[in-house]
Amino acid sequence: MKTKFGTMVIVLVVLILPFGLTSCLEDNAETPEQTLDKQIAEIDEYLASNHINAVKDPRGVRMAITEMGTGLPAVQTNKVDVDYVGKIFGTTTIFDQGNTKGLVSGYIAGWQIALSTLPRGSKATLFIPAYWGYGNVDKDPIPANSILVFDITFKDVIESATEIQTFTSDTTAIDTYLDTKGIVATTDTTGIRYVITQTGTGAVPSWYDKVKFSFNFRLLSDDTKIVYENSVETDAFLSRPVDFTPAMNIALQKLPVGSKITVYAPSGLALGTVGLRNQTGQILIPGNANVIIDIELTDLVRQ
Image (cartoon, rainbow, N blue to C red; front, side, top):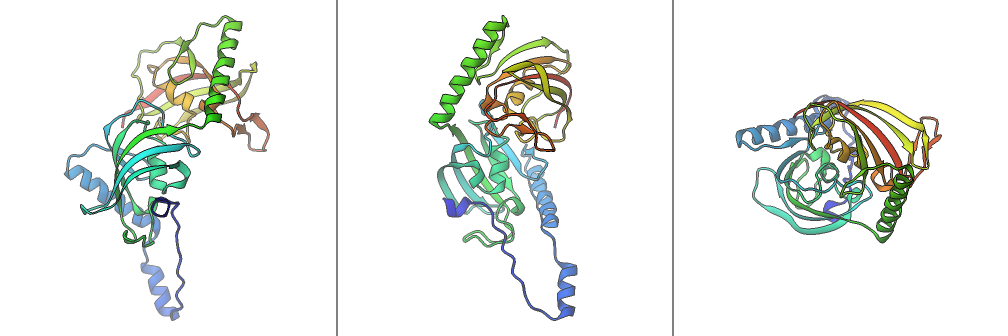
């Protein structure tokens, strides 16, 4: 499995050629980005002609979802459990299939994109341009510049004993804080606690909507000071953890546009072990910190 779905490696071969021929080849060579654009167009044409509805990630991966899961997407450091069948686009030949359990960061980039946006429990067909697969490298039996197609079942995220223990400790600390403050909050099955402080009248976003919102972070250990604030107008999906913490993914899907919410997030659903630093390297939120997130949802765009 590792040899087939390990991190993509680009191999450059330097040929010694006469100057004139070299210049000609450089002028006519297609860049990886040009190949990516062509393959995205090819995939989209196939989907349209076959009336297949697919989520279009801005980076070029397409996901035809047949069953939407109810869990959270994975992050790079998660270990996942996935059933899969792999084919080369335009053929019916299966080049690999089975089950894999590994770190998200260890798979090809196309898988990383999909697993970090698909809710766990989802079933989907992934269309992955070569740029996010194996590029211009032959990966026997996969020819160079192949578009890859995977039918996957994202069964689960496998949590370590340490992660489970940290989650239990964090949620206990949050509940103690809420009791001490006399705050009546809703407990979500994912582990966040929240209070909707203003209910809007607009539409409610889902995983693959694009949203506009403002937010700020406070530490649970010192709730008197805002340590970070920002406003977001994103062309990326609500489901992308690179743009949102998991706690924000969860909370925003509970809000009609125009709403405000205060979220009490355990560290694993906030900034995790990494935390948050400013541009000068100053620590704003330390790793493994429970946080309070105030969010106002101002708009959304349906795909």
